[in-house]
Each structure stands twice: as structure tokens, then as C-alpha cells.
Length: 181
Image 1: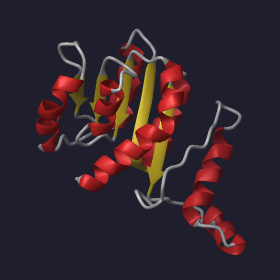
Image 2: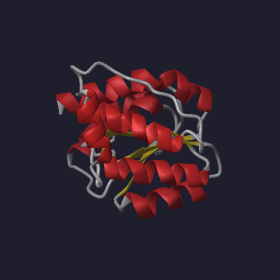
Image 3: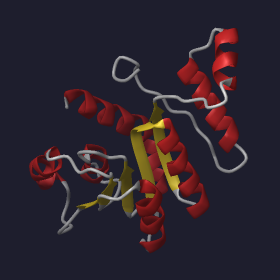
């Protein structure tokens, strides 16, 4: 759990300025597990509410929510949870919300990160995503990375940025590898 909190804090710190400029009324924490990332955005005043989307709500979520409640503002229910697949829950949440949304995902498996990004682009929603577990179905990026002596994960991030560059404003933000490789 401490590792997940360090990752959430490092991710928040890396994107907080961009997040504030977005001025969301809702932060959607996708693949959010215990929901700490969404709670960080609410506790720091980026948005008054957070929605956590994950297929499985861990028992730690309620304890974390109780511990953080004094820091989550005046909203009666500042954090809600949707236990459905992101491919269903995220498009519905984006369509149903009447204000600006910011979608965040820290340590979402790459194939899920791509689903999150594609959904956000389709809905014209702002997003900040930190993928993990790089996968290259065709093996081309992996082969190029190996040939160039470049880390495969870095090569996949750059390839994804290239895929998105004509569809949205793409910015790279990083945090310490010691927190999360």
C-alpha cells in the first residue's frame, strides 16, 4: 500500500499544474483501486468531487475514504465508486456529467490506458495517464527499442505520444523512477 500511495502522490505532483488549469468539476480516477489518486485531487482543491472506476473495489477503499474525509471538502459525498469495466463506466460517466471532467489513471496497464485515452479523446475530455506493463502486439516498437538501445517502456510511451499527437495536445510529465519504474 505504501508503494501505491507514493505513486499516487508522485503522479499528482507531476500533473497538478496542468490539472488546475483544466478546472474540472469532477476528477475520474480510472483503474483507481483504493481511490487515493482521486482523493488527492479533491483534497488539494483541484475538483470538488471524484469518481473512482475499477472493476473491483478493494476493502481498503472505505478505510482510506474514512481517513481522508476531513480533507475532502464540504460536498456531502465527495468520492463515489463505479465497479464496472472502464469501457462501459467511463463513457457513461463522461456523457452524464454536466461539467468539465479530468480523467486520471496511474499505473493502468497499457491496453487499459489506451482504452482510457481513446474514450477521453472521443468525449473531448482532459486526461493524464501513466501506463504500465508495456505491450507491443506486433513487436515492432520492441524491436526498434532493442536496436536503438532504448528502454522498451520509454519507446512505448513515445510511440503512444506519436499516435495521439494529431488528435490532442500531448505533453510528457515524469516522476522519479525510484517511486515507480
